[in-house]
Image 1 (tube, rainbow, N blue to C red):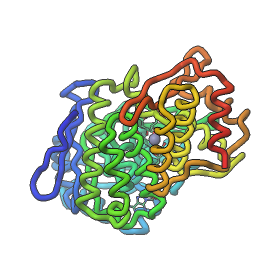
Image 2: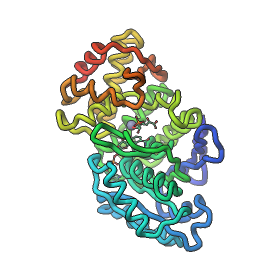
Image 3: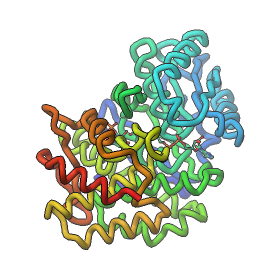
Length: 380
Ligand SMILES: NC(=O)c1ccc[n+]([C@@H]2O[C@H](COP(=O)([O-])OP(=O)(O)OC[C@H]3O[C@@H](n4cnc5c(N)ncnc54)[C@H](O)[C@@H]3O)[C@@H](O)[C@H]2O)c1
Ligand SMILES: O=C(O)C(=O)C[C@@H](O)[C@H](O)[C@H](O)COP(=O)(O)O
Ligand SMILES: [Zn+2]
């Protein structure tokens, strides 16, 4: 696993080498107070930029209201980068091709050239959308991730999955497009609502369940410190999670094998998110929490993990203030959407299931009645 190495002061650094390719390698810098140095670091990560180059800074309305967008733009400008700010409305409903088309127009109007980066400042939605814009613009321009939610710092900004939702479901159109740099300033989490912080913890607990039992228990024990925005605890949390994701992405960039483990709970979660009109609209992290509970219950019912794991996982999710049941669409609608899952093959859905704390497996032959029973188990 790549080391979350200490650097100067309280900053930590993790190197990501997608598919083991050093040429695609990039740094994830984690710590407090990093946003002010964004411009200088972008100039270093994208050679030739400081001498009269341009950038698009893509952010959302909420980040603009807090002044984070303006601070990022100021840092880029101070480094000599002529920056055009593009602000999108918040929410999963805007993570679509229309938003991408609009942003591509703005980038072309701003005169971006092939060497000019797209910089994402925001949560996973901004990152996924901006990354897809970067992958498509002029057939690919440099991309920089400046994640502002815990979820984006620990998961979405690392590994190069970009894309948008369509009417058929979640993340069905996109590209693998790796960033040149990820800059995670944990001070930005001071303004993040608690419910959004909890969403980040859902993906962190997922990393613990699939790879690292000690991480799972560390998150449960330190949940209070994360909620009180302890900068050292948050830096440690982000660095440990990025190191796990970096190791998986180094082994399997394009999800041909073990990267699918990062999808624990997501076959259920994406179905919950896609059917929001028939139930309650859950945030991605909340849907992942319910999805992890469903996957663990299904694994136990199939005899593939001990019953005690269900209790440990559910208690951990609840300690992180996450739901383990939900107001969901009827099973028929959920099962139909599940067939669109990108892990499906030959019309059969494949599930990531935990086997014990810290380990998981991929199972392709789950009977439909077992899937329906898992849905029933997590319906409020
Ligand atoms: N590409 C990947 O590998 C990957 C991984 C996980 C999730 N995702 C995707 O990420 C999305 C979820 O991301 P998210 O949970 O970050 O949600 P989000 O991007 O919607 O952000 C959550 C909310 O918090 C606000 N916000 C962001 N930073 C803030 C800050 N510092 N202070 C105050 N408010 C702030 C946003 O404006 C938004 O309203 C989903 O679309 C999911 O599919 C992608
Ligand atoms: O990086 C990955 O790989 C993941 O699966 C991380 C997930 O948390 C994330 O939600 C991802 O976007 C899901 O990927 P998808 O390919 O199922 O859309
Ligand atoms: Zn996710």
